[in-house]
Image (cartoon, rainbow, N blue to C red):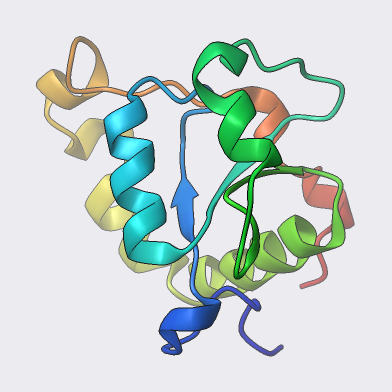
Length: 133
């Protein structure tokens, strides 16, 4: 399986990925990332309405050399599906090692809850049945 299209060393074709969050919280972060990567993409669950237009509307409509400066990709889109299948294959190849290192009982309680954790919307995950093994 080839690498997803966003994995490139050509600066003109690279983009930043805003992940695992959905809503852009810091406009200065967005500006800096656009300067570094030409474009920022974020993964949005299907039928999800973003609520950060006060910060993002101008960036989503303004075109740069790589297209819109901010682009939302939906989970059921082909690019996201290809990337998730690529990642799933890499994880599957190392599942025993990853489980040994990152199983819940191996992770410090400080990383399991509180300010060090992050939230991930369940809609960002593809149905595992659809993954090719």
